[in-house]
Amino acid sequence: MTVGLWQTADTEHATPTQAAVVVIGAGIIGSYLALRLREQHDDVLVLEARHVAGGASGRNGGLLLSGIAHNYAAACTHYGRELTRELWRTTIRNREAMIAWATRLGTPVRRCGSYVLASSEREADELRASVALMAEDGFAAEWHSTDPLGRGFVAGVSNAGDGVIQPALLTAALLKASGAALRETAEVYALLSGEDGVLVRARGGDVLAQRVVLATNAWTPLLLPEFAATVVSARGQLLATAPAPRVLERACYCDEGFEYFQQLPDGRFVLGGFRNLAFAEEATYADHTTSGIQSALDAFLARYFPELADIPVERRWSGTMGFTSDGLPLVGRLKRDERIAYAIGFNGHGLGLGMVVADELLYELAGTGSGSIFTARRLLPEVVA
Ligand SMILES: Cc1cc2nc3c(=O)[nH]c(=O)nc-3n(C[C@H](O)[C@H](O)[C@H](O)COP(=O)(O)OP(=O)(O)OC[C@H]3O[C@@H](n4cnc5c(N)ncnc54)[C@H](O)[C@@H]3O)c2cc1C
Image 1 (spheres, helix red, strand yellow):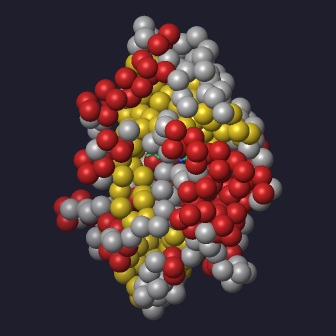
Image 2 (spheres, protein in one colour):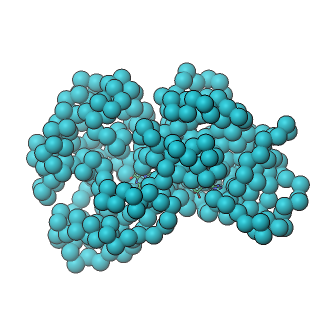
Image 3 (tube, protein in one colour):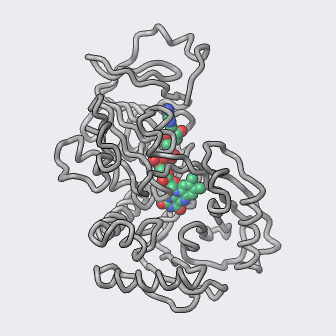
């Protein structure tokens, strides 16, 4: 993000305001971090370029799933069995924390269960192997050798503990409950390290902070170029129909996570995905939908839920995810200035991972962590403290 010279003419020479902690980004991660940081500091300021939940946190599928994008068997191949086991435990802890916070703050949450659905025989084999490995590792999941929805998928796995949340309302409620100060339309365009603090240069006025925490997910490399090769943006597109008769109870994830859907209590059917049809075109920060991907979403709906054919599509939208080179989030502090910390790179699973990852950053800042599996040191040893 950049800010034009003319846009800061009124504040450029003003004395910066002061804050113990500046959190950059008012998505679900920044809002939760603000809440937790307020337990230790009176003086927490959140700076948001757009508005609360204006990024991925207000534009996602709302699915609160255990696990990550890879199924368990694929994750074991990719990360090893021990790390996979730890990742699944982390997502279950996170799911329970999200449900507890949504319940406590009175925002919509439903533990409706999930289905992971296989779109091919190969995926079905992997899901079957996943369920066996998960059982050995003590994770509950039920194998369905045929499509549990009866709609033409090959097989599926159900998980009764998963659910859905209203992510934008939860984000706003977390931020409100934090009591932190908030400035919207306040793009941060530079972080300047000085002896008396980090000067956070932002539209609307600079702030001198003793600590800065970035919760800027996909946009992080625009502020911290050292992340340019490690965090990339990926657009995801969705649609929502008008209210329709009930066809679905659970949150669904299929085709290796490239498609996902749920039906809201009011009957609206929310479907997202098909980024894999145009990886290069979707590697963007641009906020618009494309006819290619939206047509694929329409065709998916017509194929698997033909009874919704006459229900109009009410909304089409997109959002920006931050992907890391190894598929896991990054937490840590910068070696060049340890006062600058970050929790970023949620790989399209920030609802599934976000609170626990944010907690791990807070343990690291407090010096009470025993070494997070999400430490950025694994990918960027030269820039991470
Ligand atoms: C289409 C789509 C579908 C998804 N579906 C799911 C799902 O079903 N389940 C799931 O678990 N996850 C899903 N995700 C992922 C999930 O939404 C994200 O991982 C999560 O919202 C990340 O939260 P965040 O707070 O880190 O980032 P964001 O919500 O993106 O917030 C970052 C904020 O930082 C602000 N910002 C950036 N740069 C600056 C700057 N320089 N100055 C000030 N402010 C700045 C942005 O404006 C933004 O508001 C989906 C994401 C997308 C896009």
